[in-house]
Length: 159
Image 1 (cartoon, helix red, strand yellow):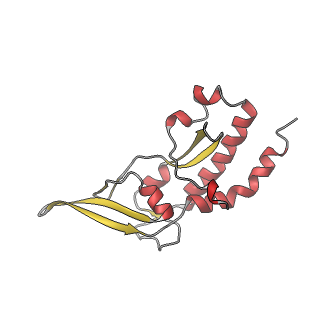
Image 2 (cartoon, helix red, strand yellow; image 1 turned 30 degrees about the horizontal axis):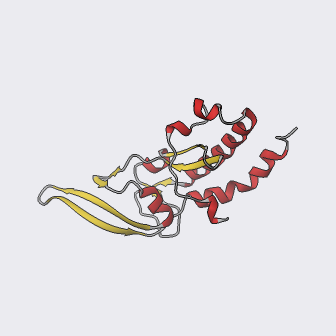
Image 3 (spheres, rainbow, N blue to C red; image 1 turned 90 degrees about the vertical axis):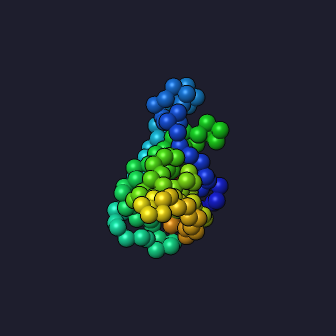
């Protein structure tokens, strides 16, 4: 998979395919095909994240402890690239009594990196920790598994 297909961009509500900004810029057939492609990848990414109390191993798909990550995955139209973007929306940063101060926690899971968490403790108050998180890609594998469907989508689109 070329690296240009997997970028750090977030999906916002204004990018949804039923919004006026999208419907006025993209013709109906292109919008339908891009929406299908985005839905395929989103469904694969969501279904690949399993609920579990255990922590996933580095390099494997992440586990969802509260279901938050799975529910944050959306897709939308990117007018600057004229393509569909699929990925987690920036939100829902609280998990198991810890507050993640970095808004890029899903990106850190995908590519690896550092995150700052605040842990509330009754005796010691709030404590800040900077932790290194090994990559647990979930969007890249979803895109690779669904990419074979994209040429078939576009095969009969031009008449």
